[in-house]
Image 1 (cartoon, rainbow, N blue to C red):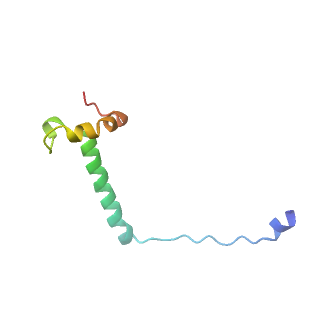
Image 2 (cartoon, helix red, strand yellow):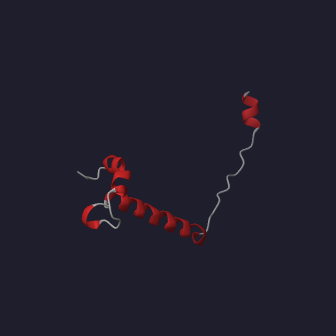
Image 3 (tube, rainbow, N blue to C red):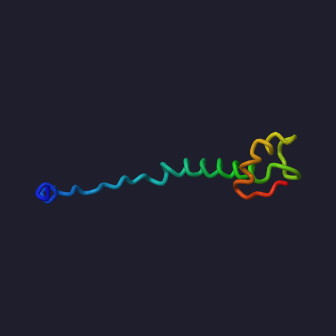
Length: 72
């Protein structure tokens, strides 16, 4: 068993390089989605509400408590 481990030759590791112009649009899109999600979970109620009614607030109510946003 020791001979087989000693006889193996380690192969060089190749690192995949992704150019900035390829992943930047996806990072920007993901960041905007996260900001939209934080808005709806954290601020969509009361004076800053963009939508009428309490449907969005009730839909994300438990998420608000999980993330530590006060809501009542």
